[in-house]
Image 1: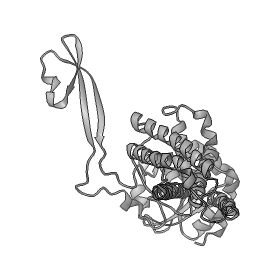
Image 2 (image 1 turned 120 degrees about the vertical axis):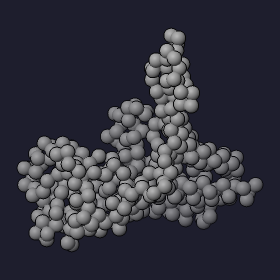
Image 3 (image 1 turned 135 degrees about the horizontal axis):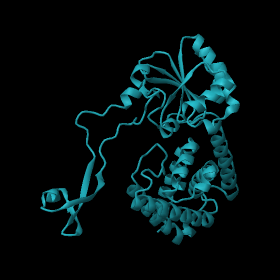
Image 4 (image 1 turned 90 degrees about the horizontal axis):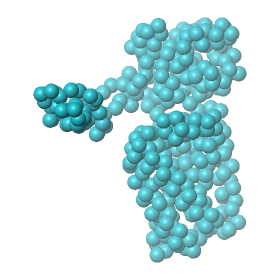
Amino acid sequence: MKILTHIARLLVAATFIFSGFVKLVDPLGSAYKFQDYFAADVLNLEFLSPFALPFSIILILAEIMLGVTLLIGFKPKITVWSLLILTLVFLFLTWYSAYYNKVTDCGCFGDAVKLSPWETFYKNIVLLGLIIILLFTIKNIKPIFSVNAVKWISFGSFIVFLYISYYVLQHLPLIDFRPYAIGKNIPEGMIIPEGAKQDVYEDTWIYNVDGENKEFTTAEKPWEIEGATFVDRKTVLLEKGYEAPIHDFTMERDGVDFTNFLMQKEKLVLIIMYNLDKTNTSLLPKIKAFSAKALQEGYDVYAMSSNNEADFLKLKEEYQFDFDVLFCDDITLKTMIRANPGIMILNKGTITGKWNANDADDINL
C-alpha cells in the first residue's frame, strides 16, 4: 500500500506542479481563459470578468503550491483535501465544457499541451482516483525532510512563484508556447499542408412531410420526397481536422488586407494594442519615443488593434503618433503578445523580437 501511495503522490504532485508552472509563466493566458468561462454563453458570470487576472493568479499559485507541498510532504491532510476540492471543481468545469461544447480548450496545461474538453475531463477522472487513494492512505505521506525544512521550502517556493507571476506581468512570459514565439514565421504558420485532414460534419435535415416535421440524414435525401418542405438543417462537427497554428491573422485597413504585403518587409514594427479601452496609457509616451526611433532607423511602424479607426485617431492625436493602425481580431492579438501595449519586430514575417512596452527603452534596433 505504501508503494501505491508513493506512486499516486508522485503522479499527482508532478501533474499539479507542471500544470501550475506552465500557467505561472503566462498568467494572462489563464486570465483570458477565465473570461471565456465567465462569458454569458458559458457560465453567465460576466460580472466576474474584471477579476479574471486575480482569480488566475490565485488559482495558479494554489495549484503549483499544492503540488509542491504534496511532493515534499508538508501538511498532508490539508494538502490532500485541498487537492480533492480543487479537482472536483475542475471536474465539473471540464464536464460542463465538454458536454455543452462551450469552451473548446480548458487551458489546464496553458498553451504547452492542448487537450480536448473530453480528454481533459478523463484526465481529471484519473487524477480524482489517485487523490482518493491518497485520501485513504494519508498516514503514509511523510515529509521527505525535517518538518522545519519542508515548512521553509514551502514558504520559499511561494515567494519565488509570487515573484515570477509579478515579473512576467511586468514583462512577458518566461516561456512562449504560442505560434507567435520569437523565431516563428507567421506566413509559414498559416500554411495548411496538402492532403491535411479535413473537418468531418454530420447534417441533420428537417423537412415537413404530410404536415409533420421529421429528421433525415443526408443519405436519405429528403429533398427528393414528393411534397416535402424544407424546415431547417442542423450541422454537427464530428471530427476536427487539421488547423494551422496561426489562423484568423489579418492586417486590415479600410477593408483592404495588407498581410501579404507587410509580411515581405525586412524591417517591420508592430505596436499591439488589442483593446484601446484597456491599454495602459501611461506607457504610450514610451511607445511614442520608441516608434520615432524605429522610423528613423528605416522601420515601417503600425499599430494593431481590434478597435475602430476613430478610437485610434483620438490616441494618435493625443500622443502625436507617427504611425497608422491595422485591424485584427482581439483574440488573435492577445495570443500574439501578452501585453497591452506590446511591441513586435518582424523580418519578412519572422518574429525577431517581442517586448512589453515597459521595456521599450531597452530595445536596440
